[in-house]
Length: 153
Image 1 (tube, rainbow, N blue to C red):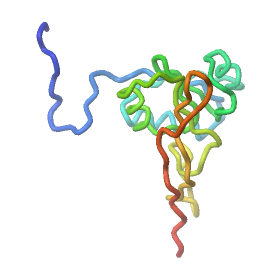
Image 2: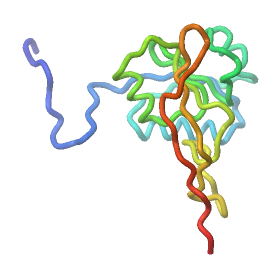
Image 3: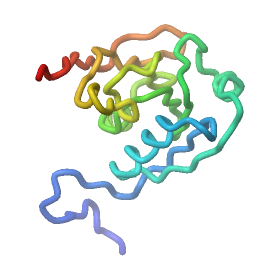
């Protein structure tokens, strides 16, 4: 319908015009990758998964520096998302549209999406940074997450 412009979606604090499709390459047996994919879907992303034996070749093909590598690699529009990046940070990336290759959370930190602890590690989070990987291969901190220590009983 012509002339609609912006459309209100009720009182929802988060409104998406359409689900963004993110393509994820992961190994078929990685449980944390499956949990990260579920986190994305829960947060409104349409996720297409591809099982591969190793994500290194995918990162290379996408031109993403290997030093930021993790257990899964994703592509969303012009951006690469590497590792356990929270959905809210991906949304901010899409909103801000910086000139960059993408976002990365190297090293699979405990407590990042998909790496939530279980048992005695439930609710624990290691401090970690989401990195904005720039086109020249350098990076800067996009967002920092503080550590949440274990609850002493």
